[in-house]
Image (cartoon, helix red, strand yellow):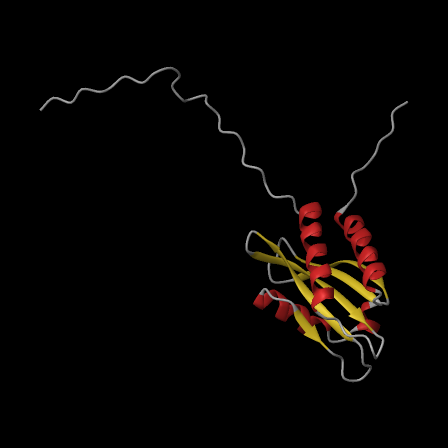
Length: 156
């Protein structure tokens, strides 16, 4: 009997990491957005954990767009409900390929530098797991000369 085991999908990897972030930081929402491969500017929502996105931060698109455009962590304190939000870009080889959004709905909760470090490490982990860096392929030596090369004489 053989067992067919499928490797985890990007969404499954992301969901595991997002749950970990929610547990560690004690926040209400975490979500991952990645750029669409066919349309580089368009984002796809890959995974959501916690409070639904529309309830957690209706203005999420602006915050995520700023994080992708600047390549830096963006912070927002929602004026109406209190709480805070951080959007951290996912960086792969100098290019922002997506963003990780974390939202706390508690009025007295602020997301500071320590939270940004934890989220930054989580983005690095996500990039390693879901977007492995392409390994350079070994070059074929099919057309390479083997052995010692002979000097070429040039007549003047």
